[in-house]
Image (tube, rainbow, N blue to C red; front, side, top):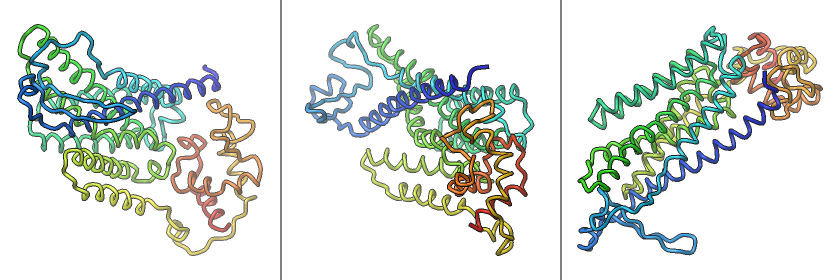
Length: 398
């Protein structure tokens, strides 16, 4: 068994790598989508004869840049020996993400992946399902893309598929793990698009041009399609990456619908910016995304005491009344001297060793145990609904 201290360091360094490579990948992706949509048709006959599809002048960092796009390679000269390929940013983002998934949700399956109140899975079964869902997600998506040629129908099928996946994962894993696995599937689809479609297509075109043969445009068209899909997946995946810090989303009783709504909002906002790059300013898309987020925020707001209990007032509950509950269910992790096998130090430095500490953190205790109910983790200490109600009454009477 690895030391929890070593695991924490591994998690920190892998998470750091994941953020760095993710920034590099998303930054390059956003830039090329922007560049592609800002290219201007060339007017000069010389440029057209060279095969230039469009160009762009830009200024940055004290210099001027002139970018030209050739759909089928330059017509007036050979390709240079050195071409810059944008792929390792994607590969390392996925590799680091999968390492992090394995370290947190597979190594810590009993704490983070499995919730016995959702599905009675063994760690081995949970991990096997996790791997299968990620792999099948890509295979199904790829098969649909290769089968359906109508873009609108393809988009609708992908949306239905992601929504079904979202619902299904909430029937298998803890709510937090379900969120992350939707992101893992989308992230895997994105990197597989790069590895199996975009880069091979580009390699085929380069090989044909260097062999003096006319390149087949189909790989470029397929690569463009998958690249567009990737850019629309980006904001949903970024939200999922940070969602574990906000149990008000995944901890809701209809968490899968909350995620579905936020994913749709992210896509709408991204579509707005992509279209704006092409000169089609449709603020209704952006506004619709924001309104959807606002509706979700209102719908998942914490219920009042009366809404939760059906009565306007409850018998007063003091901090002393809930100390035994906190000690039984929380201090194995949240203490100066933890006894949990996973956490050797209190997560986020949160401790409940004294009455003052408990009272100072009352809002967080209420939010995590009564509202989102994601604490204790996977409810591995079997906190009852009566105990959660007791904490709710204590918080309401403060």
